[in-house]
Length: 226
Image (tube, rainbow, N blue to C red):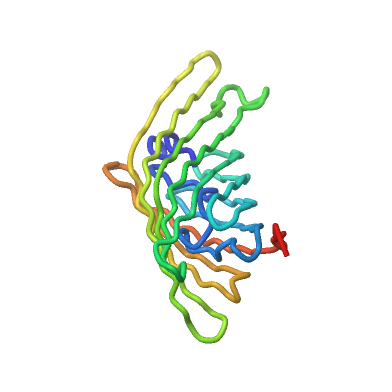
């Protein structure tokens, strides 16, 4: 999510989408089907990211991995992101309609990258972002097979970035909080549509980001016994 680049140049940052799974993030829970594939589009100030992730989990732990592609308005290039996350679903009531999830995530970003004919106009950029936080979601039943899940999460994000232009190397770090609010709409607990907004905390130059995610749960859980 290029926390450093977008704070310094764009100015923003958003929570990695790979940390999103289960009811606590507004998506259909993985209790019935263990796999979930999801795509998302995120709008920043002067940038847009498209991503896809695959999550595997159960009533409890879940793991996810994804890839993202970000187009930056202020340079004629883009970057690729590799993301991984893990979390644990904790139900706070018997009906499992109120859940919290501690989670951690890491994102590796490469690009923009200046080519041999670029003459140093585009720097070679790479970044590693870390995220730790907790999310909560509440399941509200709607008409027929439609369910709604308002969610909130708070996280600490830290980004470490390096930018190289010809022989000049610049490094920077940024650490701040992120509050994310979302509203998941689930259809038969298979398809989820999730709009959300992420608000930086104690980061004066950063701006909110807006994400639209669509998820699909699939697969069959194998029973351990008869």
